[in-house]
Image 1 (cartoon, rainbow, N blue to C red):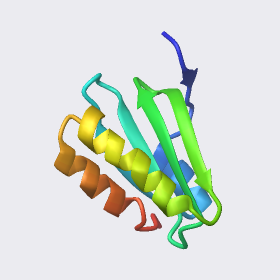
Image 2: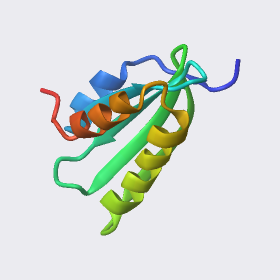
Image 3: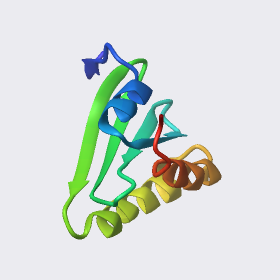
Amino acid sequence: MSGIKLNFSMVDLAKSWGRGIGSVRLKDGSSVKILGDPDDKAIDFFRIKHGRLLEGVCYRGEDTVPRAANTMAYIEEKLALNPEDAERAWNTAFDVVV
């Protein structure tokens, strides 16, 4: 199997970074974890399957939210198993985990 084996949970990563986390299942059986900075300075997408990191996309800078929202729209329209879950994951990603 491809990807990098993760030896930590994404929730623990979100906590250590002071980020919120949302998750959406995809049609291929993987899921996308969305880590959002409540100050809109960073948004990260990590695609994971069976505890392995398959890919990641990170947004930083002034136009972080519009670029990340574009990626999120693609996930919602084309990849998500349930589009409503994608919208919920986006909103949850900005609630900081404590």
